[in-house]
Image (cartoon, rainbow over all chains, first blue to last red; front, side, top):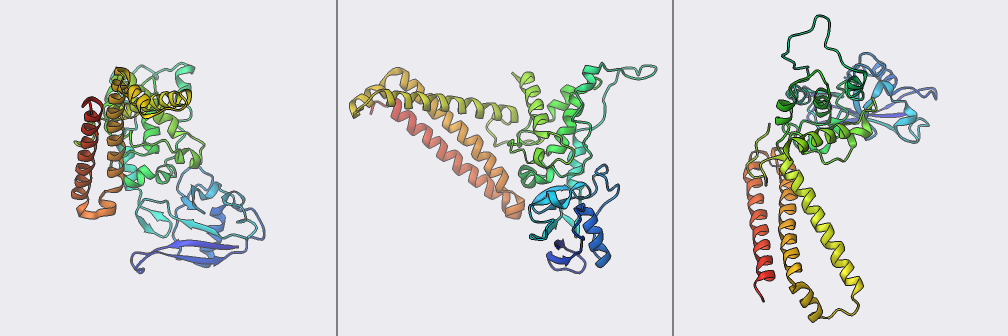
Length: 238
Length: 123
């Protein structure tokens, strides 16, 4: 099969280019990461991140034939029709919108800066109980679908609002985490958290196009979380 | 918290709410006006003028002009802050964005004043 990969080494290349490889997958429905490993055997200069190879660490987020996802849990048959059969090439690019360090490796600083802004930790100044801060099963249920985020950045880098304003719009990943703590019954900083989201950019730049939902490898729904934060702001402000 | 001095309400929630409320007003106005036209066959100029000249329609039209202006400003302000940034315009982005916003604001204001003159000027 043909594999076309974005290549760029800032130390040697004037500009990025697409490089084609012929890879023999023996007709197997491999994961994209397995194909990358086969390419790496042929061309050791290729750079990409990977670690757990089972969709837990979020290291190998990349753009595969136009859609973001994790290479390690994306089978060739699901990338696009015709890729597995070799009728269409597998096209791999780095996550869009972030500066490229080298080949498929991107600089995640902007993404992490936005994550840091939502203060992704419990804030509770009341005296700590002897064992732990308890939650009822119903309270605990509220953070299901929120805490599972692995920060792979597939969602934020598929969001045009994040492409245009990566320093002002928090992006779906950070907003999902923001709601994870707003919805947590143990967190007492709700008002302070909401006050930081009230401007025209941080949260309200989301136009609800739902690219984030479409690409999330964990099946999470940042758009719904953003909607919940809007409702909280509305209740607080009206 | 990102500050912005040129957005309509200087506040995301305010702008968001204004855009929804004005969209509702425009939607109701459009449906009502279309309904009126469909239930009145052979409408001539005088009938149309009498309909639009009634106090109810004058108030509705005023609401619509304010709604279009506010809705357009929030929407176009968003467009300018999305597409006229340093990513596209480099160091000239602030000047270009402010110029575009001023032009849009002036046109919107002219549109609004002209509309009010048409509705209430008795012409």
